[in-house]
Image 1 (tube, rainbow, N blue to C red):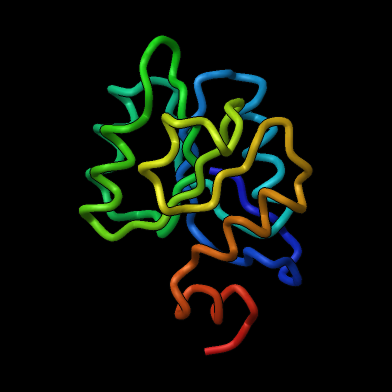
Image 2 (cartoon, rainbow, N blue to C red):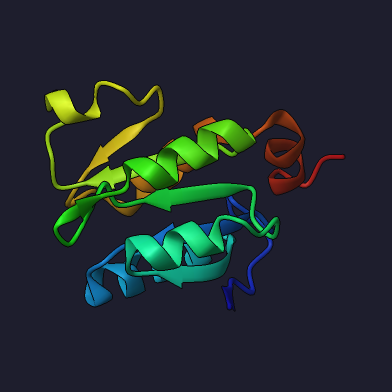
Length: 137
């Protein structure tokens, strides 16, 4: 688990699960989120890992790579929707790609700036968690 030591960041204390099949990209996501103050509670690199991990309740938002090797993350996204867990798709696909039309969530195209990713994560946070990240109760 990685967490920022600076309390003045936009994702302060927000618990995030990262699903990304590329190891370097996963580490970069983890660093970006931690620098924004988030607590990265887990990294999943396969569909099976993500399906198992999304059964837990220790995160409030997911950064989800849409393509996981030869598979898509659609089963994970559907599970998150059923559970009411917000997520951001972080993908190499164009946001206009027909395979993404099913998802009513922010789509961040790779490569993206840290600011764009953090902003997308903030937009999907439930109000209670957004206030906590801002230091309000």
